[in-house]
Image (cartoon, rainbow, N blue to C red):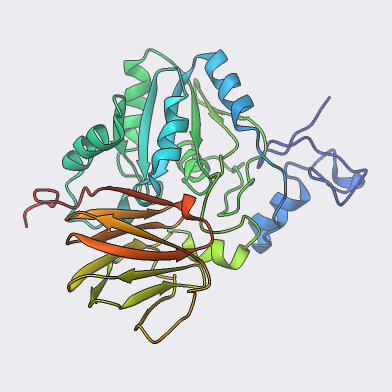
Length: 335
């Protein structure tokens, strides 16, 4: 009988310690987790695995099964690439905005839903959830009941929170392995809960993003596990903000406000014209209108309040996306 790790879904093996799924031979009959998952769960020992996930194969298998799909993404990492993948799912589906407890409480969720429908042409159901405080988890069961099904897939990009959410829903002793690392879930995992079947899937990774998958220290920083407090910078002409050693964003026009919505562990450094740091990167000038978001894929976004020309220096400009912001008039709850 083929035995699989209940944490990541990979087939267990004892022949090669350097390959995925390894467990000592004397432990293989009793083992529930592969050595990598066990060490990650008990010792927080993170080990990056260079195992590219075939996104198209996953989508094909999901579409062939025709089960209901819950697709998770956190609000700070929505972009065109993520929405394009979501739209490839042909089943009945629901977009789940995860980690909603990290979003400022002043945000008006109904207005954000309307913005998602307008900006990204999303026509499917949208719900806001958190796996940390069990907020609105009952909506998962209600949507399944509305679709007359007991089976569903959970899908999403790396660090969207799907495995954490599944562990919370099922409250099982045998937990799925969770981490901020790409390729934590390596195969489809069936989780049986009462008369329901939840299927966890390997997480997708962005084709273009501000970091490499093996940059573990940086990946830790961008993991949005805590409430995000927006960082506000009042920008005079020719002033810049450096984002770690990854990107430089420079205001070219009148005084402006730049509001950074990303992990507060990220180092932001305001510098002036005579500082040339990161100017060796590729330069591209962007024009933004009033109240525009500059999306940095894999990191978050920057809200620019006034119309401006902006210089961005970075290695790969494919990580940049410009969009109308949801942070406009009426997008905040009235206190």
